[in-house]
Image 1 (cartoon, rainbow, N blue to C red):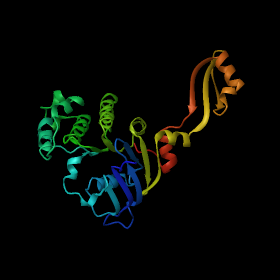
Image 2: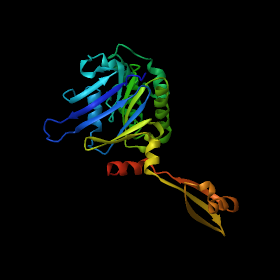
Image 3: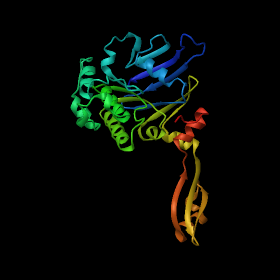
Image 4: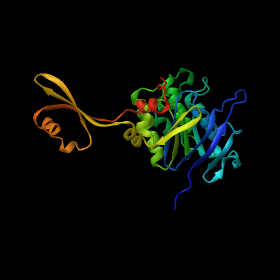
Length: 289
Protein backbone atom coordinates (compact mmCIF):
# COMPACT_ATOMS: atom_id res chain seq x y z
CA UNK A 1 0.00 0.00 0.00
CA UNK A 2 1.43 3.38 -1.05
CA UNK A 3 2.27 5.82 1.72
CA UNK A 4 0.46 9.14 1.97
CA UNK A 5 2.70 11.88 0.49
CA UNK A 6 4.01 14.53 2.84
CA UNK A 7 2.68 17.12 0.37
CA UNK A 8 0.10 16.51 -2.34
CA UNK A 9 -0.41 19.71 -4.31
CA UNK A 10 -3.22 19.89 -6.86
CA UNK A 11 -3.90 22.73 -9.32
CA UNK A 12 -2.24 25.36 -7.09
CA UNK A 13 -2.85 28.92 -8.24
CA UNK A 14 -1.84 32.29 -6.80
CA UNK A 15 -2.06 35.85 -8.11
CA UNK A 16 -0.60 38.87 -6.35
CA UNK A 17 -3.16 41.59 -5.66
CA UNK A 18 -1.65 44.22 -7.94
CA UNK A 19 -1.07 41.80 -10.81
CA UNK A 20 -3.31 40.28 -13.45
CA UNK A 21 -0.85 37.48 -14.18
CA UNK A 22 -0.82 34.29 -12.13
CA UNK A 23 2.47 33.87 -10.26
CA UNK A 24 1.58 30.19 -9.79
CA UNK A 25 -0.58 28.90 -12.62
CA UNK A 26 -2.13 25.56 -11.73
CA UNK A 27 0.81 23.41 -10.63
CA UNK A 28 0.48 19.89 -9.24
CA UNK A 29 3.14 17.71 -7.60
CA UNK A 30 3.80 15.38 -4.68
CA UNK A 31 6.64 15.34 -2.16
CA UNK A 32 7.30 12.03 -0.42
CA UNK A 33 8.62 11.31 3.03
CA UNK A 34 12.40 11.07 3.21
CA UNK A 35 12.78 12.83 -0.15
CA UNK A 36 14.82 15.86 -1.16
CA UNK A 37 12.59 17.59 -3.68
CA UNK A 38 14.01 20.46 -5.72
CA UNK A 39 11.95 23.26 -7.25
CA UNK A 40 14.00 24.95 -9.95
CA UNK A 41 13.42 27.79 -12.33
CA UNK A 42 14.53 31.28 -13.35
CA UNK A 43 13.87 34.33 -11.18
CA UNK A 44 10.20 35.24 -11.17
CA UNK A 45 9.09 31.76 -12.22
CA UNK A 46 7.09 31.10 -9.03
CA UNK A 47 9.55 29.17 -6.84
CA UNK A 48 9.58 31.51 -3.86
CA UNK A 49 5.82 32.07 -4.10
CA UNK A 50 5.26 28.32 -3.96
CA UNK A 51 7.50 28.00 -0.90
CA UNK A 52 5.68 30.85 0.83
CA UNK A 53 2.37 29.13 0.19
CA UNK A 54 3.62 25.79 1.51
CA UNK A 55 5.01 27.49 4.63
CA UNK A 56 1.65 29.28 5.09
CA UNK A 57 3.00 32.79 4.64
CA UNK A 58 0.43 33.13 1.85
CA UNK A 59 -2.98 31.57 2.48
CA UNK A 60 -5.22 33.15 -0.18
CA UNK A 61 -4.42 30.60 -2.88
CA UNK A 62 -6.64 28.44 -5.06
CA UNK A 63 -6.31 24.71 -5.46
CA UNK A 64 -5.63 22.09 -2.82
CA UNK A 65 -2.61 21.33 -0.65
CA UNK A 66 -2.73 18.20 1.46
CA UNK A 67 -0.13 17.85 4.20
CA UNK A 68 0.15 14.28 5.48
CA UNK A 69 -3.36 13.58 4.21
CA UNK A 70 -4.98 16.65 5.77
CA UNK A 71 -5.84 19.94 4.09
CA UNK A 72 -3.13 22.49 4.87
CA UNK A 73 -5.73 25.17 5.56
CA UNK A 74 -7.13 23.11 8.42
CA UNK A 75 -3.87 23.21 10.42
CA UNK A 76 -3.35 25.73 13.20
CA UNK A 77 0.00 27.09 14.34
CA UNK A 78 1.03 23.57 15.34
CA UNK A 79 2.08 23.21 11.71
CA UNK A 80 5.08 25.45 12.41
CA UNK A 81 6.28 23.00 15.03
CA UNK A 82 6.69 20.46 12.23
CA UNK A 83 8.63 22.53 9.70
CA UNK A 84 11.93 24.41 9.59
CA UNK A 85 12.56 27.24 7.16
CA UNK A 86 15.87 28.59 5.86
CA UNK A 87 15.18 31.86 4.07
CA UNK A 88 17.37 33.02 1.18
CA UNK A 89 18.32 36.21 3.03
CA UNK A 90 19.25 35.56 6.68
CA UNK A 91 17.28 37.59 9.20
CA UNK A 92 18.94 37.93 12.60
CA UNK A 93 19.40 40.50 15.34
CA UNK A 94 22.79 42.01 14.58
CA UNK A 95 23.29 43.40 18.09
CA UNK A 96 22.83 39.99 19.69
CA UNK A 97 25.35 37.17 19.64
CA UNK A 98 24.85 34.07 17.56
CA UNK A 99 23.85 32.07 20.64
CA UNK A 100 21.50 34.80 21.88
CA UNK A 101 19.80 34.82 18.48
CA UNK A 102 19.34 31.07 18.52
CA UNK A 103 18.01 31.06 22.08
CA UNK A 104 15.48 33.75 21.17
CA UNK A 105 14.18 31.88 18.13
CA UNK A 106 14.22 28.58 19.99
CA UNK A 107 11.80 30.02 22.56
CA UNK A 108 9.19 30.36 19.81
CA UNK A 109 8.73 26.58 19.72
CA UNK A 110 7.41 23.96 22.10
CA UNK A 111 9.79 21.34 20.77
CA UNK A 112 13.46 22.33 20.92
CA UNK A 113 16.79 20.73 20.30
CA UNK A 114 20.23 21.44 21.74
CA UNK A 115 21.74 24.53 20.13
CA UNK A 116 25.46 24.04 20.72
CA UNK A 117 25.72 20.73 18.82
CA UNK A 118 24.03 22.37 15.84
CA UNK A 119 26.42 25.32 15.92
CA UNK A 120 29.36 22.95 16.25
CA UNK A 121 28.03 20.96 13.27
CA UNK A 122 28.27 24.02 11.01
CA UNK A 123 31.54 25.33 12.43
CA UNK A 124 30.13 28.22 14.48
CA UNK A 125 30.60 27.03 18.04
CA UNK A 126 33.75 29.11 18.58
CA UNK A 127 31.88 32.20 17.34
CA UNK A 128 28.67 31.64 19.32
CA UNK A 129 29.39 34.62 21.62
CA UNK A 130 30.29 37.06 18.82
CA UNK A 131 27.76 39.67 17.72
CA UNK A 132 25.99 38.56 14.55
CA UNK A 133 26.72 42.01 13.13
CA UNK A 134 30.37 40.93 13.05
CA UNK A 135 29.58 37.70 11.16
CA UNK A 136 30.52 37.30 7.51
CA UNK A 137 27.80 36.54 4.96
CA UNK A 138 28.81 32.86 4.98
CA UNK A 139 28.62 32.71 8.78
CA UNK A 140 25.14 34.25 8.68
CA UNK A 141 24.06 31.66 6.12
CA UNK A 142 25.29 28.85 8.37
CA UNK A 143 23.56 30.39 11.38
CA UNK A 144 20.42 30.58 9.27
CA UNK A 145 20.64 26.83 8.70
CA UNK A 146 20.96 26.24 12.46
CA UNK A 147 17.85 28.36 12.98
CA UNK A 148 15.89 26.12 10.59
CA UNK A 149 16.72 23.09 12.77
CA UNK A 150 16.01 24.57 16.22
CA UNK A 151 12.60 22.91 16.60
CA UNK A 152 13.81 19.48 15.44
CA UNK A 153 11.50 19.63 12.37
CA UNK A 154 10.29 16.81 10.15
CA UNK A 155 10.29 18.98 7.01
CA UNK A 156 12.88 21.53 5.90
CA UNK A 157 12.22 24.35 3.43
CA UNK A 158 15.56 25.65 2.16
CA UNK A 159 16.06 28.53 -0.26
CA UNK A 160 19.59 29.05 -1.68
CA UNK A 161 20.99 27.34 1.41
CA UNK A 162 24.64 27.25 0.25
CA UNK A 163 24.69 30.59 -1.57
CA UNK A 164 27.78 32.57 -0.59
CA UNK A 165 29.52 29.67 1.13
CA UNK A 166 33.03 28.52 0.29
CA UNK A 167 33.35 24.88 -0.86
CA UNK A 168 34.34 23.60 2.59
CA UNK A 169 31.37 25.15 4.42
CA UNK A 170 28.99 24.32 1.56
CA UNK A 171 30.05 20.69 1.99
CA UNK A 172 29.26 20.86 5.73
CA UNK A 173 25.73 22.11 4.99
CA UNK A 174 25.12 19.56 2.22
CA UNK A 175 26.31 16.73 4.47
CA UNK A 176 23.95 17.96 7.18
CA UNK A 177 21.04 18.01 4.71
CA UNK A 178 21.79 14.43 3.67
CA UNK A 179 22.01 13.42 7.32
CA UNK A 180 18.61 15.04 7.96
CA UNK A 181 17.15 13.05 5.05
CA UNK A 182 18.78 9.79 6.17
CA UNK A 183 17.11 10.25 9.55
CA UNK A 184 13.71 10.33 7.84
CA UNK A 185 13.38 14.06 7.19
CA UNK A 186 11.86 15.59 4.06
CA UNK A 187 13.47 18.55 2.28
CA UNK A 188 11.95 21.08 -0.12
CA UNK A 189 14.90 22.78 -1.81
CA UNK A 190 15.04 25.80 -4.09
CA UNK A 191 18.40 26.84 -5.55
CA UNK A 192 20.17 28.17 -8.62
CA UNK A 193 23.27 26.09 -7.86
CA UNK A 194 22.92 23.06 -10.10
CA UNK A 195 25.76 21.20 -8.41
CA UNK A 196 23.66 21.23 -5.22
CA UNK A 197 20.73 19.85 -7.21
CA UNK A 198 22.79 17.03 -8.66
CA UNK A 199 24.34 16.10 -5.32
CA UNK A 200 21.24 16.34 -3.15
CA UNK A 201 17.93 16.04 -4.97
CA UNK A 202 16.00 12.80 -5.42
CA UNK A 203 13.59 14.52 -7.81
CA UNK A 204 13.36 17.99 -9.30
CA UNK A 205 10.51 20.03 -10.76
CA UNK A 206 11.24 22.80 -13.25
CA UNK A 207 8.88 25.76 -13.09
CA UNK A 208 8.56 28.38 -15.82
CA UNK A 209 6.14 31.30 -15.81
CA UNK A 210 4.22 29.75 -12.95
CA UNK A 211 3.83 26.34 -14.59
CA UNK A 212 5.71 23.10 -13.97
CA UNK A 213 7.20 21.96 -17.26
CA UNK A 214 9.00 18.80 -16.13
CA UNK A 215 9.42 16.58 -13.06
CA UNK A 216 12.05 13.83 -12.96
CA UNK A 217 15.11 12.54 -11.15
CA UNK A 218 18.46 14.12 -12.07
CA UNK A 219 19.50 10.80 -13.61
CA UNK A 220 16.38 10.62 -15.77
CA UNK A 221 16.97 14.18 -16.93
CA UNK A 222 20.58 13.47 -17.85
CA UNK A 223 19.60 10.42 -19.86
CA UNK A 224 16.78 12.25 -21.61
CA UNK A 225 18.74 15.40 -22.48
CA UNK A 226 22.19 13.89 -22.94
CA UNK A 227 23.84 12.42 -26.04
CA UNK A 228 24.31 8.66 -26.27
CA UNK A 229 27.97 8.86 -27.14
CA UNK A 230 31.43 8.48 -25.65
CA UNK A 231 34.19 11.05 -26.09
CA UNK A 232 37.78 9.79 -25.79
CA UNK A 233 40.93 11.88 -25.50
CA UNK A 234 44.10 9.94 -26.26
CA UNK A 235 47.80 10.56 -26.79
CA UNK A 236 49.17 9.82 -30.26
CA UNK A 237 52.45 10.88 -31.89
CA UNK A 238 53.15 13.52 -29.24
CA UNK A 239 49.71 15.10 -29.46
CA UNK A 240 46.38 14.82 -27.65
CA UNK A 241 43.63 13.75 -30.02
CA UNK A 242 39.91 13.19 -29.63
CA UNK A 243 37.41 10.68 -30.98
CA UNK A 244 33.66 10.25 -30.48
CA UNK A 245 31.78 6.95 -30.62
CA UNK A 246 28.10 6.01 -30.41
CA UNK A 247 27.30 4.51 -27.02
CA UNK A 248 24.99 1.87 -28.47
CA UNK A 249 27.01 -1.20 -29.46
CA UNK A 250 30.26 0.34 -28.26
CA UNK A 251 31.54 -3.00 -26.94
CA UNK A 252 31.56 -4.28 -30.52
CA UNK A 253 33.07 -1.15 -32.09
CA UNK A 254 36.44 -2.29 -33.44
CA UNK A 255 37.86 1.21 -33.74
CA UNK A 256 36.98 2.00 -30.12
CA UNK A 257 38.41 -1.29 -28.84
CA UNK A 258 41.62 -0.77 -30.83
CA UNK A 259 41.97 2.72 -29.39
CA UNK A 260 41.73 1.36 -25.85
CA UNK A 261 44.26 -1.35 -26.63
CA UNK A 262 46.86 0.57 -28.63
CA UNK A 263 46.77 4.19 -27.41
CA UNK A 264 47.42 6.00 -24.15
CA UNK A 265 44.00 7.14 -22.97
CA UNK A 266 43.89 10.49 -21.17
CA UNK A 267 40.15 10.90 -20.55
CA UNK A 268 36.87 9.13 -21.34
CA UNK A 269 33.53 10.88 -20.94
CA UNK A 270 29.99 9.94 -21.82
CA UNK A 271 27.78 12.47 -23.59
CA UNK A 272 26.06 13.23 -20.28
CA UNK A 273 24.88 16.81 -20.18
CA UNK A 274 25.23 19.10 -17.18
CA UNK A 275 22.35 20.23 -14.98
CA UNK A 276 23.08 23.79 -16.11
CA UNK A 277 22.49 22.75 -19.71
CA UNK A 278 19.33 20.86 -18.73
CA UNK A 279 18.07 23.95 -16.89
CA UNK A 280 18.49 26.03 -20.05
CA UNK A 281 16.91 23.34 -22.26
CA UNK A 282 13.87 22.88 -20.02
CA UNK A 283 13.21 26.48 -18.97
CA UNK A 284 14.60 28.26 -22.01
CA UNK A 285 16.64 30.56 -19.78
CA UNK A 286 20.16 30.80 -18.37
CA UNK A 287 20.86 29.79 -14.77
CA UNK A 288 20.87 32.96 -12.66
CA UNK A 289 24.21 33.86 -11.15
